[in-house]
Amino acid sequence: MAKELKKAGYKVRKQSFTFAFSRDLEPATLAQVTPVAKDIETEAFDYSGSGDVTGPITAINLTIPPGDAGTATSGCAPSDFPAPGPDPAVALIQRGTCDFGVKAANAEAAGYDAAIIFNEGQEGRQSC
Image 1 (cartoon, rainbow, N blue to C red):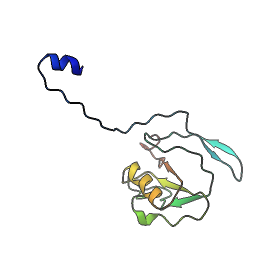
Image 2 (image 1 turned 135 degrees about the vertical axis):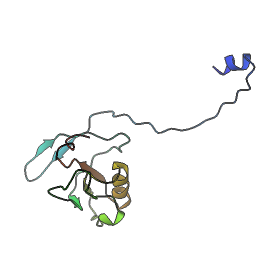
Image 3 (image 1 turned 90 degrees about the vertical axis):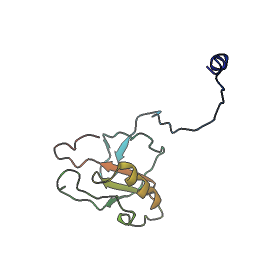
Image 4 (image 1 turned 120 degrees about the vertical axis):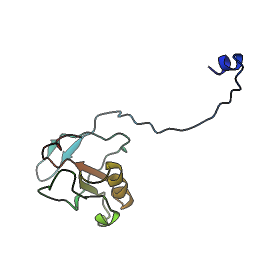
C-alpha cells in the first residue's frame, strides 16, 4: 500500500504502534471443588487474564437479594476489598453500578488472583 501511495505523489511515513488484542485460546472453566465438586457455567470477558487459580472465595460487598437492577456497588471502590490471605484468592463480585473493568482492576490492585463477576439474576440481569 505504501508503494502505491508514493507513486500517487503522497509522502508516506510508517509508524509502529501497539493495540490491545484478546482471543480465547480455550473455553473458560469454573468449578466448585468443595464441599461437592461441580462445574459451573461461565464465560471469560474480553481482555481477561489467563491462568489457573484454586483458592478461597471472598464475597465483595454483596447485596443478596439484589435491589433494583444496576444498584449494587460491589467491587466499585478499592475499599470494598479486604486484604486477601497468603494463599491464592478469588474475589466474588456482583454486577452493578460500575464497569466490569473497574471491578476487575480493583480486585487485582487489592491482591486477588482471580475475580468472578456474577449477574444479579433478576429480570434483565441473566446474561452478560
